[in-house]
Length: 159
Image (cartoon, rainbow, N blue to C red; front, side, top):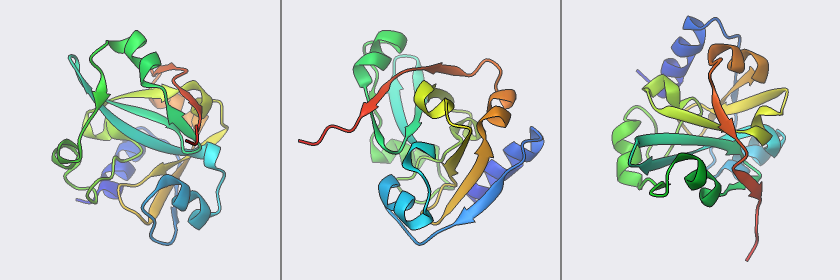
């Protein structure tokens, strides 16, 4: 089974309407934004984190950076970025290095950034470098009424 099929089955099981958008091969979320001609604030990028409580995926807009300190205050001081090997072991049906846009379809707890949830609709990585899944935020919230969320992203800081 491919990751896109897993996400589609998850959305279908929860009666969430969606569409699939294909784009030129890209390796970064901002390259995906340009290739797919979408608003960066509406592309959800997933970051896999590891902590005492286990794994958690943080979903935030492609044009923002994760603020780990904010998440650590909320979810534990030991929270840190997962390495590529762990990502590969968890998301075995995804292309190497890809954290898919609906990690809960793999049983991974998911935290959503409030900035992303403020969008009317969002694009989720399908688990490869060439497809996105477009869903309304309202439908996504209906699937997870106890959706964990807070503000943990900030503007990208250029050094």
